[in-house]
Image (cartoon, rainbow, N blue to C red):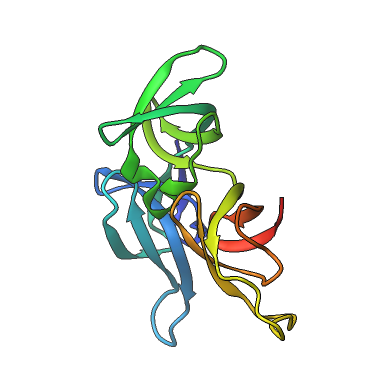
Length: 187
């Protein structure tokens, strides 16, 4: 672990603070007219999801934690637990399905995901940014609905609702951005 000054905190840094592991979500550097400068940091607890707003002055020292990413293959889900396998050691790890949040429907069998570890403790799962999904149902194309920026609602094979262009029909494969839940392109 490295000790850094409070004004060196950037979004994405993981800090050990108040006995927990916190990820810096937003950082705003403030230089008031009176007094010293400080960083207003929005932190998110990596273990339980709580949020915290904290001020760090430049002379404050905080512990920056380095996390390890391991690529692991998703095998199956059982009783709210996701089972991943390390490709190198074939060791299986069970993680809470809550770690993925609303991106859970995009996790597919055999998909390789990056699991973030602090020592031996898994903290989060990152799935690929773009995933291929099949359009399960959508509305038929209407005449005159070929404008460049018109979209129609669709339900994917995983149950997620997205907006797609009018030229895409049912039973077609599309690429969906898992961060924004938006149509990206045809597969």
